[in-house]
Amino acid sequence: MKRAFYDRPVLGVAQDVIGCVVSHAGSSGVIVETEAYHHSEPASHAFVGLTNRTRVLFGPPGYAYLYRSYGIHACLNAVCEPEGVGAAVLIRALEPVEGIELMRARRGLERVENLCSGPGKLTQALGIGLELNGSDLIRGPIVIARRQSGWRDVEVVASKRIGITKAAELPWRFSALGSRYLSRPALSRA
Image (cartoon, rainbow, N blue to C red; front, side, top):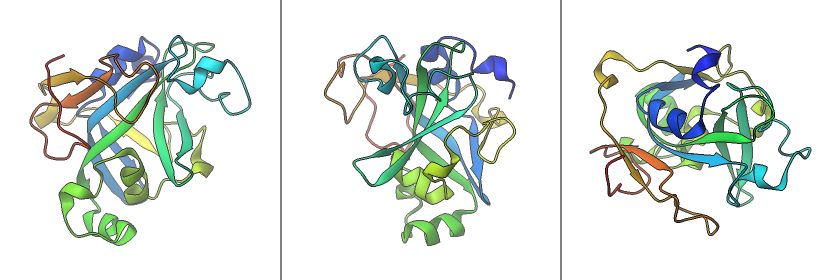
């Protein structure tokens, strides 16, 4: 994956990253669900402007923005758009492909469909913590790689983002049509 992939509008990246592979610490999964966030809308952490917390969001594209959700879970985002624009793609769900036994041990679960079916679940399954905030998604230790051959023509559907109260009406959630690994079912086509 090249940095230019991320250096473009967040809505395009959020759709195009479906089918790409996230790898970390001996495990990986195919991205099957994302959400886009941009500083122009109030659900984005970047909406408040440049702060110590949002510094990574306004930085160069292709880096990981990690934050804690509900005081418990780390959530993985890929920073997008040119430096100075606060935008990122939240990785919401993965289809596990490698290191499944390791993911099961990290999550304490057996059922593969539940290992990475949410943003906090997937970071736990991949062993990703807040200490990796600001890491390079091209060089690692968290790497997002191009779509595998079987995912090149994946059909993507759009729906409203979930788990938020502000700007919830925006259809900025993207999912692989028919995936059984989503956090919630998707309803319409992109």
